[in-house]
Image (cartoon, rainbow, N blue to C red; front, side, top):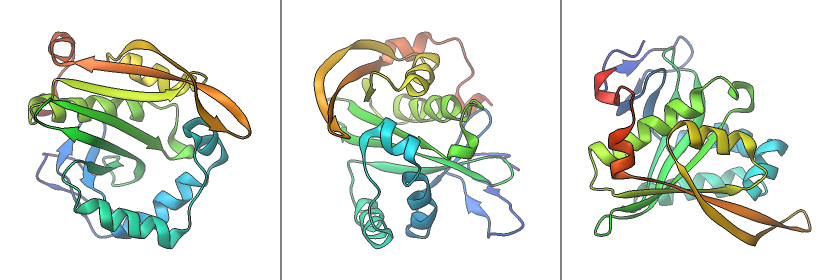
Length: 199
């Protein structure tokens, strides 16, 4: 059960995970090297691979990347957990430039838990972290223009469609347009929803 941002999520099968942040229906725990297998399975999903535009890497390579990224001060990676401790996705705040107040949001959900609002909850929670605890002024998100699920999540979280980078991505032998969306601090402040510290 999620009770506060500093309490743990309990599960029967796994040891409790320490939450560092929470949202309306989810909690965020720092991504650990032991999460590599779970991330590998999600990244191997063909829908995710197509919509995000990457191909699966080896499990050992992913484990090394997670280990390396833990020491990167320009990014924060989190596992998205349900109140019962079930992991449903990964969300990250990357390319953080604190002096300019800029960062980019990355989100990937477990295929079995898509379409249930967890993506919106996770993006809202990460935005609250970025604007409420970090000196961010602008969050950016980038996705294929055909990734309607991601575009819907970002719109629900208040992100504004800025434009399209035409033919910016090569995937499956074809060029794809990429949508660029952003959320500015004053837009986040104007959102009529509870903040992570209020739920």
